[in-house]
Structure formats: structure tokens, C-alpha cells
Image (cartoon, rainbow, N blue to C red; front, side, top):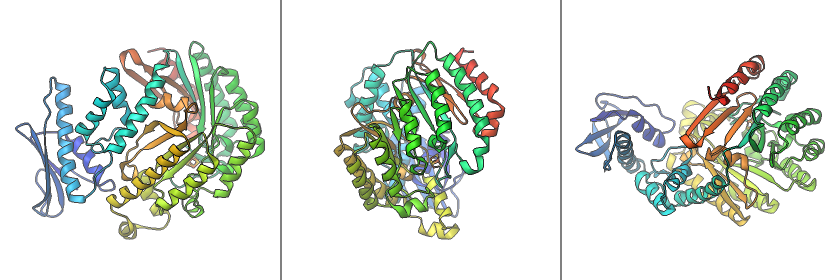
Length: 491
Ligand code: SF4
């Protein structure tokens, strides 16, 4: 889908809307509509944005939206991009019959729009109206935003300037899942790096322990990867280091994500060090899908791991599930949540598979080229299916007494949806709230980890990135620590 701009130069806004409707297609800017093929023509004229879709010289659909009055240059740009997006939305939704659930909103933290309006004195109702008018967000997404914004506001109200979180990345997994986008290496091939990785990681943790002495560490999150890929003796060493450096943290989460990485001995180590929260992730209760996505475990493995952990006294277990996995529909979501309802975990995180990942997965599972295109469903169909699955998940979590407390979106999510963390009251994840609200700093160690320092009074966030590959991280550990030292000293 190509595009033509007239009377404005907001290329990014136009590209973004094209991607919402045609996530797997390329696009390029042209001066004139092509003789063959489709193009979006957008124009700013006399304070109104116009959009049309032209195919082989003939107009297929059109839309328009007036630019809202603005008072300064920054507002002018915002008003123009919002009007352009709404005009293109109208034209493309008429053309395709697809109504994106989030309207023209593409940001990664939609609830933040409400919390920011609230901090400027506006009501929740005003925030809801703003999402409706400025972005055409659907009513169910608005109500989700309001619930999350309320939970985030409660969290922010209890924050002090000294509060922070610690993230520790263990980038090893038993095997690599086909949809994985994290820093993760299969243990059988990369386990040789383990000793050196720990040496580098401990050096970084010693630095962070000192750097956090004048802070209030509320949560430590050990993620990855799958930390429980480590043997019990290595888990023991890691947790001893964590306890030595960050003993005051009220929340200590260990991702035990893959059920095939869990056994009694490892759970006993977690218990001995007072781990407060673990994640055991089924993703789906369909054995066929699990095979298809290369998860290397079965639903029965998940049940065994969950019941073992529960029997050993873990009362704060989170379960991740993914909606939109290839070949799955509402019946699979029903089945997955029937099982979860029986287990009644303290929290469930509902992810939507990113579109790009879905496309890659299709390729991996054997649909190539034209075949993949032929079997690819129209976006409206994908969107309707995932909407129903998300509705099932929302109702199921509500019936387990869980409420949404954080939410984020990624680019290229199937049907342009969201990831939502649900939890029973009192079991909300502090670390995830720290990350999502961006109200508290997170100091991070390990390959690919990102440290984020928050300066709330001046509305500033500064970041320091660690290299993603293990060998690079090990070899350049002093540089990684140096980056953080510089960041934390305010240089
Ligand atoms: S368990 Fe998670 S981190 Fe590990 S390979 Fe699978 S998706 Fe990636």
C-alpha cells in the first residue's frame, strides 16, 4: 500500500495507520497515485484532513476529519496527526470492514494517557471521552483502560522517591520456543557460558547492591529466559547473592516459566530463600498447539508443575497464556481457562501473539510463500477471533476474582490488541507495576537488561542498555557497569 501526502508532511502518522490495517505489507511514499495498485492519498486543506484509497486510478473509499483548534506548535502537530489518523481510519475501515479495537491509538501504554490526564486534574470520565473522541477507541478497551489506570493510580499514590525495583536476566531456556522474542539461549548449547555468565552477573549485582543502598528496593524480578533452567546448586548461588544484596525487597519473583524446567529440588531452593512469587506458564492447554509452537512440554507437565509448587506452599503463582496462537480459536481459550479456573491461581497474564511472530510461526510450521498467503486470514477475521478469546479471558479472570492491574501493547500484535496482567487483590505484581507506570526506577543486570532511572519531578526517564549476546555481555561487563555508574551519578 503506497501513500501520497498533500498539504502536510506527517509521513509517520500515515505509515502508522497503514500498518494498523495492513500489518504484513510494505509501503512507500509516492508523488502521484500509481497506475496499478493501491495507495492512500491524504490531504490537509482549510483545516480539514481528507483521506482516500485509490486503486488503479479509481477511488475506493474516503474519510475526513477536522483538525481540532490548538494553542501552540506542539499542540498543532498533535491535532494534525490525530485528525489525519482519524480520516485514514475512516477510509481504511470502510474499505476493509475492519474496525481496530483501539481505534487510531498505537501507543504502548494506553492507560498512561488516563493517569497523565488525572495528574493534571481531569476526571476518569474526561479521560474516557478523550480516548473516544481523539482516537476512536472502542468502549470495552476504554473500560479496560479505566480499570488499569485506577490500579496504577493506587500504586503511584503509595510511591516514594526512593522506591525502585531490580531486574535480573537469566538468558537460558531448556529449548527455544518458536515465537520467542526474548534474550534466550538453549541450555544444551549455551550452558558452557554459565560459569562465566554468573561471574559477570555477580559483579554487576555487587555494583547494583551498592548503588541501591540509599534506595528502597521493593521488588526483585528474576526473569529471562527461564531461571529454573539452572540446576539447584546454581539457583542456590544466585538466590544467595540476591538475598545478600537486596534482602529488604518485599516481593521476590522467579520466572519458573517453562513447566519442563521445574522439579521439587529447584522449588525447594526457591522456598528456602523466601521467593514470594513464581510464574508457571501453560500458554495454552492444547497439546497440539504446544507442539506446533515448539514449547517442548505438555498440558500434563504444566499441571504437574503447578500442583507440585502449590503443594510446597507457593500461594502466589502467576500463569501466562497467549491468545492468537496459530490454529487456535475461542474453544481453545475456553478450554485453557476451564483448567485455570480449577487451579485458581493468584494472577494470570494474558498475552496476544504479536503479528510478526504469527507470520514467522506460519512459516516455521510449514506454510511457505504463496501457501502462507493463501491460508492467511483477513485481519477482520483474526481480530474478531481474538476479540472473542480476550472476552473469554477477561470473564474467566473476573470469575476467579482477578482484576486487570497493568497493560501494555507491542507493535505488530495480532489484531492490534494488548497484554493484560490480572490479579486477585493483594497479589498485584509490584515489579510489573513499577515497569508499566514508569513511576519508579528499575536497576537491571544481565544480558539484554535495561536499566531505567526515573526523575518524576522533571518528567524524565534515562536508560542504560546491556548488550544482548552472552559472550558480549561477559566480555564487556565493566563497560555495562560503567554505563550504569554514569547514569546513576547523573552524568
Ligand atoms: S520459555 Fe520464554 S524466554 Fe524461553 S524460549 Fe520460550 S518464550 Fe523464549
